[in-house]
Image (cartoon, helix red, strand yellow):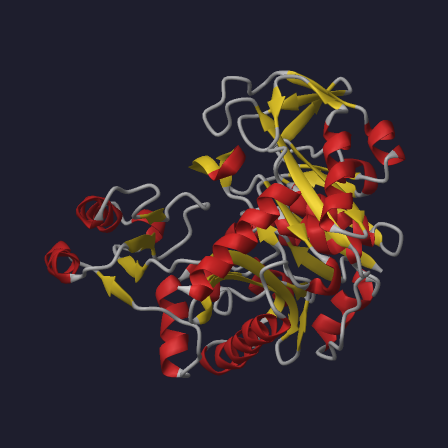
Length: 437
Ligand code: GLY
């Protein structure tokens, strides 16, 4: 079967890796990913130019398209591919609004009475915005309504000093129509531990994956700027050390209700639904949805799949998705980034990746924002590669991943605390404090 994966990052490398032995694999990539280019027939081009992606798919008689990043979904890549007969793992433009239009997402919770939402308001003018923030006595989160490549959300107590600073930033969001809407969402800031649940959906049925926890802060001990994610872990049993089966099940229930609501309000949602939750004193609260796999979280769950990915993709497009099985192992992913990231001066420098030694340890390499020049791997200013290992416990997987990171040489950095006992214990303690208060 001919399958096309769209997207050039580590997430897409991980998707390609679980397909490569079972399909005739094609990729459409914005730059030459050293991993994807070795295991697929690739074309380099702008993934957002949906007509060109469709032309490539047609020329190569592609049967299934899998869309990695959110931006092409927002441009209607699935609508375009389906119009030429290519079935897709990825939602249509209208169903992808669950990620591309945050006000659509919050309204769904309200209209369909779905649990786990939070206090929010959408503003399109600074007068109402300022009045609201002057009278609101809790910390808030400011979110552009549309896509901003993960850079638009600002949190009081993290990026913003107080609700006064939130006012200034929120006005900027409206004035500059950041994310494509002259609107802003103000949400209550929920305190707790964040976690991710990803699920496959065929529009009606939902098959959830093991939970994972990302580490967005750039530096150890959760210091520094918020990034796309510096690493993540998942645990045996599909739960997390601070997440009970009951809270996992409640989160999945929220996701199932959202899938039903999207089918009524838009179109059946086929693809991957990524739920970012906060476990709070009041249980799981939905922070946001993405219409794709998480990055790095895809690298935790995809290598654990027991059910072949191609069977899952066929079931999604045919509408007969059933349970998806995963190995009962823990996993740890550590992202290697240029030193100083996200404010790095080391973009464009070469690095050495000893893939063979990493493989000998039982770990995997998934390439992200690097390029290849005369067999040399060249950094960019963004995340370079994910190193992923599995084990009987998070800590066993962590040891392997950490050792594997030492086989990447150059001006690079990674968070060596991701998946360590001390950091995981800190998360559990934090959650216990919240629950016992
Ligand atoms: N890990 C965050 C994201 O994929 O959006």
